[in-house]
Amino acid sequence: MPVIDKRTMNIKTPLIFCPQCGTPGGQPVAGEADKYECPSCKTQFAISRADAREPNDRQRYEQTVAGGSRGKAAQKGRKRHWLAAVVAMGVAAVLLTPLLRSQSPAPVVKAQSMGSLLQATVFDNGGKISFIELYESRNADTANFVIRATDMQTGKLLSEPLRLSLAPGNGRGEFKQFSDGQLYLVLQERQLMRFDAGAQQFVDITSTLPERFGQELGAGLSELKFAFHAYPDSFEAVTREGKKYYVYWLINQIRADDDFGAVYEKAVKNFSRTSKFYRFGPVGSGTSTRYQLIQYWAKTEPGQPLYQGYFELYPRSGDAALDRRMKRIDVGSGYSVSPYVISRGLVKIEAIAPLALRFDAQILAQNDKRLLLAYNSTPTGEDGRVLQLMDKDTHQIVWSRTAEQIPSLAKSSRGRYTVGTALPSGFYLAADAGLPGLIVDNDGNIVHDFAMNNSRPSSQSRR
Image 1 (cartoon, rainbow, N blue to C red):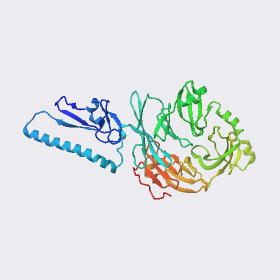
Image 2: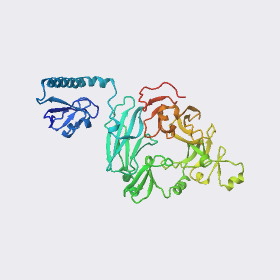
Image 3: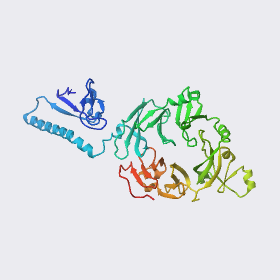
Image 4: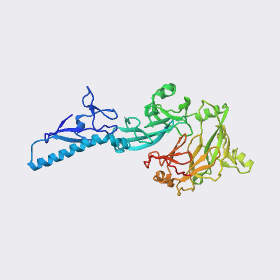
């Protein structure tokens, strides 16, 4: 596709690069004007004449093939030498590219061409880890998103980056993994997507909501987001009429928000099972609130919504009369709770040693074997966030570090906003949802650090 420079009347031929893998060159596609096929990865792509006039936009350069007769003989000689050097460089690039590509990771599209990193997470597909990034850029009329899935070990793209343009709206983008191991994405509180492990790509499933729950959501949605953790594996959906629902996705159930508590308390009376859970229970109030790690048992029923709302622990006073006046009910380990907690299914609790109370504590994530804990050791948190892995069977701490001891986490407010995602054999940790993180196994050994760009597993225990 030659291009004529109108100023010099020189004929210029653009040396194009594949937008997928970066290989220079391309074979014209028969019957398709200005369309080429990459000789390496076979991706087909279009190059317009406008593109040929804007080489920086397509990351390619133009090579002068012929020129007019102007200047002195010495100038002509210098031009011929310069032209020969450019041609030689181009030929060398074409010949060496396959060799270089075989010895180094695949070229990665620069982040600035996709916007700023909004969120990052991982997906475990039978032990094969995909690193998933969500980029965002905005202008006056659109919010543009790019979603990339790359292989943890090689950094190579596992699928074509997905590009979406939406009208500006509320929210931005958020990943969340449900208890069935599936990964979901909500964009701008309006679009719901699920990660397809086979295609290594997100697919839009927004329309599934009104199809499943036509009576409640058939009139359309004005807002959609992940529900608070008290409503596990669910979405919060608001209709155009302003009515809010909790959609329990995995069990195909929906409940209205306005009478959720009353309906749940009635349903709990007929629940036939008791299940064990973990949480930090708050003790005290205000700035002096501390947290005790507990395991607790609550009533459940297969196929029915589960509510895991907030409840406060009160140390037993030792005065039965006082406890009756305060309307508190003994639940074990020296603690009592308000009556409404019992009416919503709590059976008993058991405090987990060590009994030292923590500040601003939370369970970041959990898998079948471990709890990933985070807390402050002081009320103000000036010593930074403490991270621990606890064995579920023995309740022993198998790994403990402050966030500042982990370079990838120390870069953001001393670990204050650290997030965690459970994997079958470990956890993904990040300083916050918008920064690349690292994977540790169930014993705290670093498996891969995306922030440090180190693909080699570490043999050093972090215990």
